[in-house]
Image 1 (tube, rainbow, N blue to C red):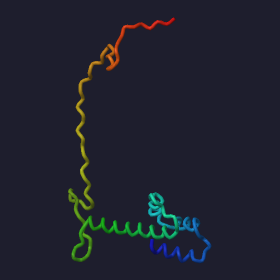
Image 2 (cartoon, rainbow, N blue to C red):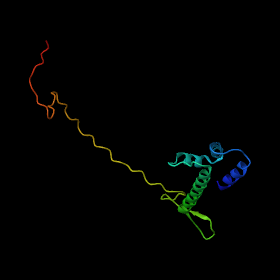
Image 3 (cartoon, helix red, strand yellow):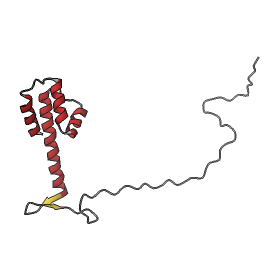
Image 4 (cartoon, rainbow, N blue to C red):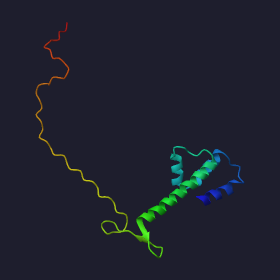
Length: 133
């Protein structure tokens, strides 16, 4: 992304783009994943300089995380080549945790459904009849 930013600055120098249209042209040409992350960020960049700075920072962070993943997946031997790790089954690649299996609930015998309504708590039952005129 650093090369893209430098090329973009060189091309824009002779154009009349500035402000929002300049930012739109920059976003159109940049990496889609980085653009999406910046657009979804809590504090979006406001100026073209902020877009340049944050784009380069995201790209550097992504490259660093890739190096870290490679480091965690295997060790380099004395020749400097990456030696892959074996997972639990002896296969190449990253071992995945075993899924948890939850025990099934034991079915309980169905309770008998009462035929009479049960009294509600806090409500007094009366034998009053409703009379309509």
